[in-house]
Length: 330
Image (cartoon, rainbow, N blue to C red; front, side):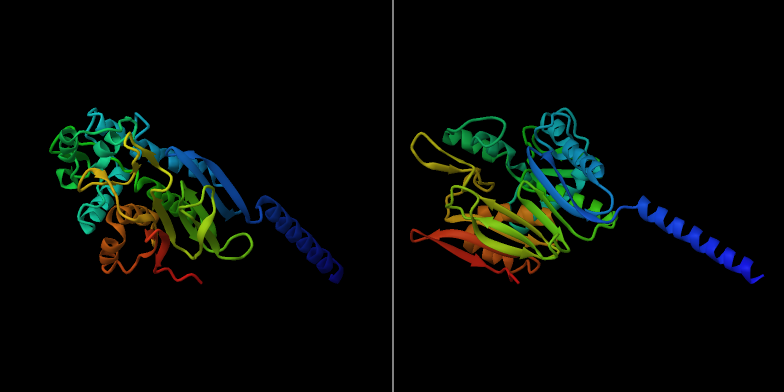
């Protein structure tokens, strides 16, 4: 009898071992993976720790956002609205539009999704034009006002003038980052770094077991030299600056790509770059642009009512570069 008991015991032990081995072979050990590609007219890089690759799901999310918010995809919801083909909106468009309107209100119009006509007129959009007369500028300024557009029932966009066009370029990349983060959270991913065109969100730790380190470029450097390196902990970060995207006009003056919606003209103050850390990347993205419009002192006033934001401003003063920062880097 004891002999049969021993045989059965060893059989159960053997079967159990085989099942464990098969289960182990069927599931991969979590490892850090990299997904890279093009989206929104820029590059993305995503590093995440997962037993299973999530590349297909990532591409699907980015595809949906592109078909909603891209100015360059002629079939996107935004492009069709701007072209006057349709006034129908989708759920992604609604979320971004409402968030953009909130930031517009908070900044008293320093952020404005109706900036597209001015961006194009100054030569920073699909339509290249670099010289504007005063009458042209006045005409364009009439089309830039976020209060002249609104949603009706989360399904239709209403405009007071059919010539009003929208540009979500200062918030769409950040929103895309947030959407990918939400996807990875749902997949149970604990550690990740998501970067779309310089707008970033991180969670957990990197492959070396350390906090994710993000560089802020030196505005005066020709290459990728970092002015500051920030240790980011479960947060989003976005940087906006005028040190790369500009042109020199016929009078030899430097024209910055940051357009002030309140004047429909490029900004002329001393702020070179604005970095914002926030709970969401869409918020960080939108406020980084807003602060580039407002300049250092006006931005400080706005920040008093936004305790959830931390900033790093790089600006010029008396021919030297200065830094203002509220970021606790530890």
